[in-house]
Length: 316
Image 1 (cartoon, rainbow, N blue to C red):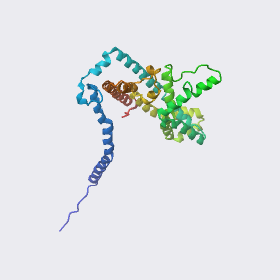
Image 2: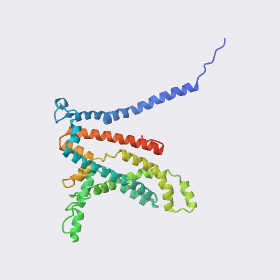
Image 3: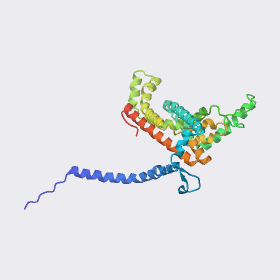
Image 4: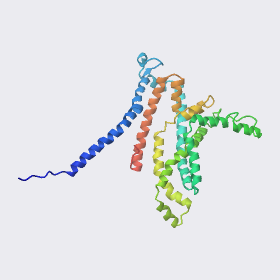
């Protein structure tokens, strides 16, 4: 009596193993998907407030449904259009200045990598990275102690007889955009350089050795090896900055705003906050936020398409 041996298909076993591994991986990321939905997508339900005349602390069901009233108000009210126009100018100006200075972290990273003294390089990198972890409230406290009417700078200049009246560094509307981008650069320069420093470490050391043998100096090494190696990283970050064009944040501008500089410091995020919280018009603020989100997503799609055409790969 003959017994047939049961054959096992290795490919079939590998397929079952991959399916089982896929299920395990899905279960591992499932908590993060749930958290992402709860904190990123579920709050979008709040957009419904843009279609009501909401007045706190009433329930939404007790408020009047007004449809597209707040959206049409943005373009039908002359005063509202002028305010929003100035806010958009401020937003565009700060975003363009941010994009224009986005090359500074890359140049700073190259500068750090060229330092021969390891301890000095680590010291400079640490001192320039720490400000990123300081809240804007503390940054403004430092700015106030230095540049207020009774601050250290004005006191020193008056004691030296250089000025007779304190200079209005903070209580002035002149050079608001410039001062904001300078504070932002000071705070984020070291942190922004970290990604470029990581990219520099991935450059093949053999390229530098071969270039030195051919007689290339330090400047040519930076120009022809280091800089081209960092350009892909710079391009991706630049594309993301363009996609994030309307998102300046509000914490920096909120702590620095006052009655003197309010005209030129109000970016879109701060304007929405002031309307919703100070002006007590949550419905109008929500409508503006919705339009901002739609424009931001559109910019992201355009940037992603451009990246795919230029670089051959998308960023999302």
